[in-house]
Image 1 (cartoon, rainbow, N blue to C red):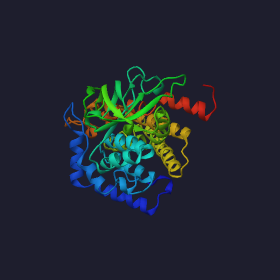
Image 2: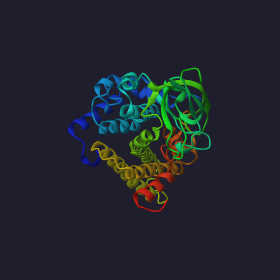
Image 3: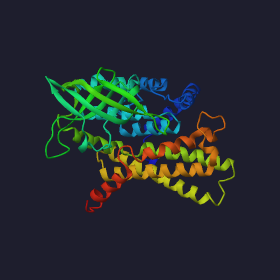
Image 4: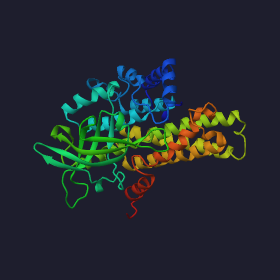
Length: 388
């Protein structure tokens, strides 16, 4: 994999090589292969690989050493994410626990919260999920109905959250609930760190077309205190508003697109379809767009490294990388034909079932962390100054 923009330092290039060496070890490859072929209605959670990465401080390399990281930068975190995806390691546990919840805790948590929660995540011993979306309202926090009712020196949470990934395997979740109401819809939202293995939390599966299930979570009065509040009471939207652009670099989607393209080109070469006029031009076009997607994503990462986050560029990168990945997944099945729809559990599956898995995952990429339509709306209004 060529280095992005030629801007990595020698130490960063060495870090990528070290991560790659670990991910190429035979026991790791065997574990990844097993994780990709778990029986139906099961899914991978924390792997032994996560713990091995955690022992080296590699699972969250941009976190300070006292919390289990290397004290490195967002660049090393992006390198790790790219390599995990490139080597087909199931990535949702890492993305949710480290890149989203862990990032929010790292940026806005109290000293006590960081000391209590971050080391376990960084060691690969615990993981976390997100409880934002609700029935009928998606991730529109302005309309959320989950409420935090005062109870002595704390609150009790009541409500229902849906489309939450990995919640049944997680130790805690970052939950958005309304603590007050007023004329400004985004004011009055508070983020709570909620222990999931507690009385008052019900978790049921929401099966779907992807390899991994969503969860339907009922909050039936679980009690939380001020120690569980992330950021300020009633001001949770500000936390979300600052974390989301960091989630929208597009690194993961660009890496998935590049991984899928590599598999598709190998298959097309082996079957003689690489030179087929029906596919050759489209493959060439998508090759260029996948490269462009990676450059857009890395520009976001470098903006963050330099302390200059650009929300408009993040929205652009998130939109472009996910739409390219989605289009590529459709072409992969078209090139592979009906056999491409066999999943990884079928011995006759083309390319180990990766085309089928990518096709089923692709629509979700354009929905998670903000839909493509919302990204374009944001670019149009905030970036181009078009009327809302």
